[in-house]
Length: 62
Image (cartoon, rainbow, N blue to C red; front, side, top):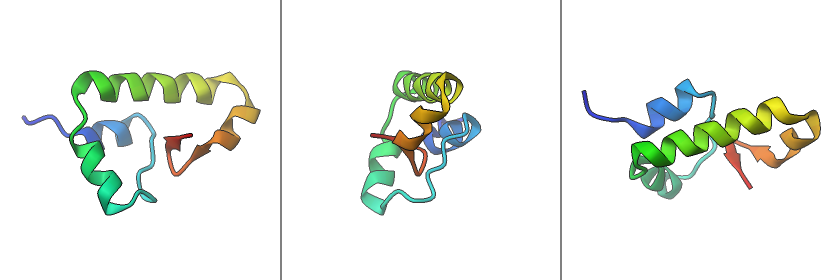
């Protein structure tokens, strides 16, 4: 099966519903290692503390 970054990020709980078409193209070009890193950071932030959640918008970090 072909690697699908969008599917893998969704499985990790990262909501990409608010990303623009241009951003989606970037996400689609991510490697497995990049997706794993984003998923790991997302999990750590989610588990960290409620105040960190304010910095997670649309599933992406800023």
